[in-house]
Image (tube, rainbow, N blue to C red; front, top):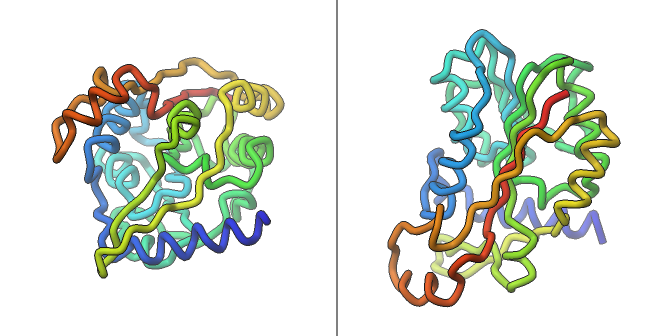
Length: 223
């Protein structure tokens, strides 16, 4: 089952890659990125990993903030081809091809739901993170998943595709972080009609129906 879901996820991103910009390209991503920016750690002169970074939107921000080194890791080569300003590595975020304690900052945007095991994911991040380093990540909120919202897109043929996504409750994330010796400093929920309020086609119905729903989660932890 796990292997099948991983293969389906990779296939979905390969379909999405030709249309996937290297910037936050929809209202949800812009709201999520603003929440990440509000908790952004100092990165100047530090070694940073953009974990499961897709086309590299956070790699660009890390480079702009003058990180000493930026490494972008993703499992989808067509996505990685769009990354600029970073060393590109094709790899599995569950088995990171890096030495222990090699990064001072790890950033991961909307990727936890693609992890096959939250405990193993946190443990790998903690392994490559230096003592005192910061881990900042976001994901789709479990409340949004329970409400039936999905991560979907239209491909080049205008066909809908839904990206497989696992749901990890916040308590499970907290337990995984603690087991990996990561201390969670801040948890922020992005809510419909509050942080997410940018208009888009047919947004009035969306905001009326889902007002107050937590749609994304942003977490900052320290080793």
